[in-house]
Image: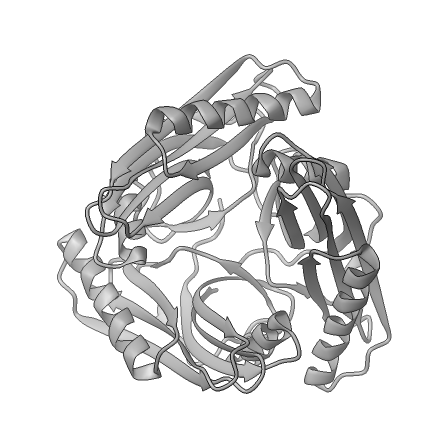
Length: 153
Length: 153
Length: 153
């Protein structure tokens, strides 16, 4: 089987770039995750995973990651991305939610936190805390906002 | 290398939710796959993989999965998702096809089965059987339909 | 952890098909990667990875892959997909960029090469060479163009 991640890092970043994909690449660099291979997942925090402030992993590694992102080519537009992790008992899994939109960081953070709370209500499980990370970006030419929970080893 | 999956489980589910992502999350729960990390793949059934009725795997695990899904915020709309697995000789790989649309379960099932048949015609291989699973959902506020083939170990 | 790929193969292909997903499936077959499970990544070439002309791996295997693709149902339309790998020192990681659009192969190749160059400028790293692969396709009914860098073992 594929090894279950044991560590997690919450991050966010935003940037401009000469193309949409370069803006995304630059937002990854701003978030500190630009030089690995992102494997996007839908998106559960493994039981007993430990939070680590930064991803310390070799370049080119395969890194499972849950993320929200938005790219805009509308100069002056405010964009935001956010992630939330709902956590109950530390021995049980958590639920990761992602959000992005044409809004402020504050609105993105509030929305994604409600989403994580709803996921716990749906599972009928007690929620102990919610970790939230969000970023906003005012587009100059081509901008990208990115928020993520990397799951690693 | 990454281990090749040895088991597969076919599933479908549908649900409402307070946001689009929560509706998707709730559809995953309805399908029985809500508490693992989905790694979306395009989409081959490994040779000699064995069908198992339910995914029995620890929460937070990384699970390769082929899926079709649709989310709608149009009250009253009928949505459907379907998957098909074309299977020839059990010693050879199968082909998984996914479909979703604004249609009935019956239409989704018929469409996705034709897609699997076409994949075998294209490969010039004899088709022995097609496994199909589909689900439909009448949207109340925000609804999601989800059909999948999970590939596990 | 998940093993870091040690080989890479650059490929491109295009095809028609009876549905959008079948056209994609047929483009994968044309590119030589139709019978494995694609795990899409964002997209770094691991350090010291070795280029191999064709992917020699068992059917159903999980294959990390960076790709650009476009599917069109507009008869007569010209579509193209391209990938580029920016490479500096062979001991360091490279950066993979993907592009697709309604344009010629030549334009797609030029665009994606510029994207890889921009990724190196952003990282303030010297670029030694860029590998580019592109394909174009004139749509008959439903056509797909696909270009990729498969990362394997």
